Length: 314
Image (cartoon, rainbow, N blue to C red; front, top):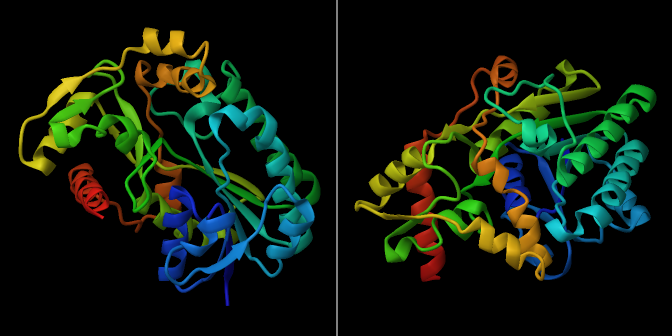
C-alpha cells in the first residue's frame, strides 16, 4: 500500500493534504507534536514526534514512499529552525528512499516578484525569507542531483480555506466579517496570488501519483486564484449576501510597533506582496495533471464563509 508521511499534519496545510491522501486510498501517517497528534484528520495514523530530532524523524518515516514537508516554524523562528528541519527531512528521505514533497511559496522571487512567474524565473534573495527559502530549495536540488534524493516543490500563493484557521484570509481579511468589515492590506486594484487549500491538496495527491514521470528535482507552480481586492470583496459579498465596508491596514504603525514586537515586525516585512501585482504560471502543472479539479473563486469563498461561520459557532 502506498504510504505518505505528513510532517506538520496538525497544521492547516498538512491537515488538508492528509485528508486528500486518505481519500485517494493512501496509508497516511501524520506526524505532529503534543495534543495536535490527537486531533488529526479522520483516517490518519497519528504519530507524536519532534521533527527537530533527526533520528526520531528517520524512524517515523520508515516505509514512506512520500514525505510531505509541511513543517512551518513561526516567522520569528525561521532563521533558527527552517534549515535544521529541512536537513532532518532530507536525511529521513535519504535513509528511507522516499520522495520529499514541499509546499512552496512565492517568497523565493523576493521584492522583484511579478505577474505570471514561471518555474525557471530568477529567484532573488532580496528579503530574509526569500534567502532562507532559496537556500532550502537549493540544498534539496543538490541532494537530488548528487545523491538521488527526489524532491517535488509545488509552489503556491497565499493559502486560504480548509478546516483549520490561521491564514491571512481568516486572521486579517475576513477577521471582522461578522461586523460587516472586509479588510484588504494593499491597494484594491493590485492582483494577488491565492491557493485554496483543498484544491492544492488534490494537486499534491495527483502529482504524487505521477512522480515517476518527473525529474529528480521538480518545481511546479499551482496557479490557484489571482484576484484583486475588488474581486475578492465582491466574491465575499456574494457569499455573505450583503455589502461590506472596506478597511485598510496601517502598515506604518505596524512597522513602528514591530520595533518592539518581533512577530509584528515579521508580518510587516511581508507587506510588499500586497503592493506588488503577482501571479503564478500554472501551465506546467496543468500539462502534467490536465484533469485536476479546482473550485472557482466564488465557490471557494462560499466554502470559506460557511466554514468560518461553523467554526465560530462551535
